[in-house]
Length: 293
Image 1 (spheres, helix red, strand yellow):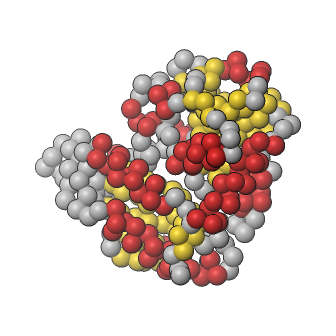
Image 2 (tube, rainbow, N blue to C red):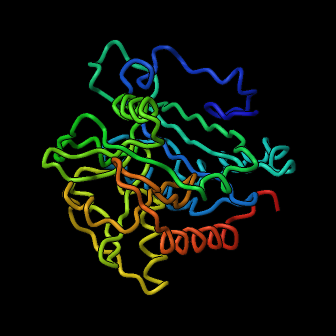
């Protein structure tokens, strides 16, 4: 595998950053994860736009624009094209940190002249999408998150809480952990957004419940509208489990994945979920950007 680190393509085994980097010392950084679908990048511009928006919101100044990030990402895909030729799609991740910590400044001063940029490309298993057709099981994370905490709305590299929650899910035989906020409402998974279907209504929590509005989440809302399905954004109290007909989780690598069980509640139906899943897959395969062409 070939990675991109601060202007250079290098073997993944040599993809190093400084131990004085803000990301290493303080977990300060932003990232975007996405993938190729049949060798094409899908919704790539949306990921770059969100990254740019988050950088501006946090007051970081990049000495280059997202067009340069786009070019570097495409170079990374091309450098790993052997996996595409072998029938494997690629998971891509762009990570940006403020760069090297300046000991003459405070550790809270994130303004640097040279940010760190790393782009990883790793092959997905050939059966990745077929396996996700089968669905996931989810449980609740054992801790609640304050909905007002500002970090949830950024795609930040500080993932320790999510790692602990996913570890808990795996230890219980589940695939994903769903976070409850401080008011006891369902919000999102450790790396996914959540949608439920109750009484024929497609519902997802709004961002102000304390969650990150993912790129795939927005694509699902748009696709559902095209299918004649209106998505309602409103809080999901824990009691809604008793009314669930279907549920699914989304992210930019998996697309749409049905939940077959959530917190012990078995969900036999996934008809509407799979309709949306296949519509997203069709878009990804037909509207993606051919990097190699």
